[in-house]
Length: 240
Image (cartoon, rainbow, N blue to C red; front, side, top):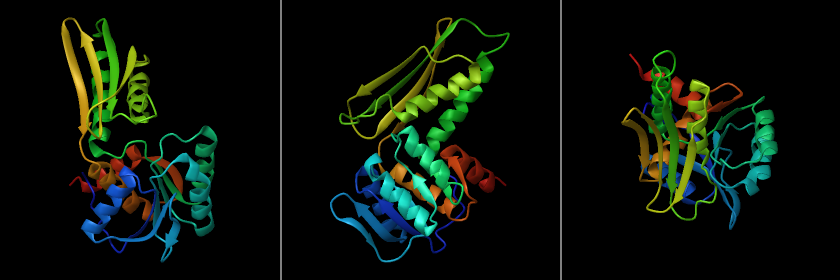
């Protein structure tokens, strides 16, 4: 995954101690990165200093507290909560007028590549040479993942729709198996099938993506961006 930014004295605040929040704290400890604020439903907000960037890995219920903290202290935000309401996203868009806000639907760099490959495929199979075909999206998460289809599956479907002008024929969601997730776009035509599949097997993967977003956001200008914007810029920086 491209980085090129380093820690550089970055201090972090982490809201939420679930699977992603816990993995992010582990990654920060492993890299010697200072976490000066933690918050969760059980112990509340605990801070030894104001962090350079706040990462929200909690739930929509914490949104008002996160928004207020970033607004009052002018803190960049990496929002890793995908199932916010339209009103909550509108509030984050308002916050982004003053600070950088990263909308992190999926934090993995390989998912970023999956979206790029989907666009390449769409460009090759549309137009004059197109043949009758079907396209589907499938996602799998462990039992307990309530949000279905996942935001990542919907983003994959939307990427295909924007590139081709045609929505996938189906979006299938499955709740079974091991952590963390699988997302796949399948395109079938004339007796052939092509799969663009991405699998994540460790929570350290999205945790490192959240850290990359935080490093990026610390020096970014105000605005509401996605992980695609972050990875596009980081990739450009790491290209000779």
